[in-house]
Amino acid sequence: MKSNIYLEIKEDVREALENDVPVVALESTIISHGMPYPQNVEMAKKVEDIIRSEGAIPATIAIMNGKIKIGLTDEDLETLAQSPNVNKVSRRDLAKIIAEKSVGATTVASTMMCAEMAGIQFFVTGGIGGVHRGYEHTLDVSADLEELAQSKVNVICAGAKAILDLPRTMEYLETKGVSVVGFQTKVLPAFYTRTTNIPLQAYVETEEALANIIYSKNQLNLKGGILIVNPIPEESSLDSAFINTIIDEAIENSVKDGIEGKDVTPYLLKTIVEKTNGKSLEANLALVYHNAKVGARIAKAYTEINQIESHV
Ligand code: PSU
Ligand code: MN
Image (cartoon, rainbow, N blue to C red; front, side, top):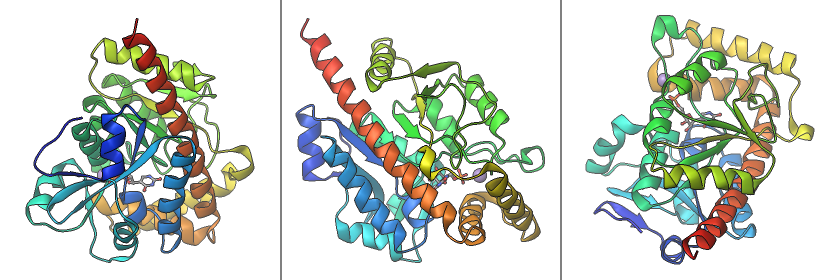
């Protein structure tokens, strides 16, 4: 297990890390800026329960009282879900929020950084950030993509939302050398929907096959994480014409309202939930739960392979 003076690792997470029990990290921006209250806190708790029921230990990550908390209490989750003063913390914000001891919700990028500091290799979320549509005017590319190229943490998500420019997001990842592996899909899933016409270079049918890829990557000591894309379950997926019309409207509104920088993604998520009367939220919850199950199973499969290989 790794450590630094700012890490505050919860007891059950610490024990798991010391005893080679699989641990799965979770982010907190999805709680504070990705979903409305109270569904956000219900989601945060249920995701942890799913990971535990699969035999892994969940570690939700946030910045509180000048510490990087790895593993949160129910009270912490409530604060993140309800408090209006929670900062959205990406790589650039991390040191500042720790130094001034304010509350920070970690994005995919900063959760990867913190997970790596604690020695956690697996991280489950809903969707990642990417290259935004209209990036040729704004240069809006999420720091999540750079982080995937840097931090050795494997991220399980349901693809990226069509609020992003998906082909360019994939090009960016290719340039940065990030492997995108489809879990039971040969094309990139688009969060609310299971398919796009963007082919993937790698796909696997089983958690074991994925764990094998991660094992090889670790043996090669390659930088960065693997992005595992796991499509939303069929029964929860939305009609693509329906959701894409709403996404287009949400983007138009964001431009009209002059939304920029770190506010863009939260603004779009909120607008989409409102415009779909909560349908998008239901889909979002379903895909996060599915990712938690698959992510915990991958972490478990990896631990098993690692134990076998280190004994031969
Ligand atoms: N996409 C989602 N839900 C989310 C996010 C993205 O479907 O909650 C959050 C994640 O925390 C992600 C962040 O890391 O938004 C990306 O923000 P930005 O585009 O500002 O980098
Ligand atoms: Mn951005």
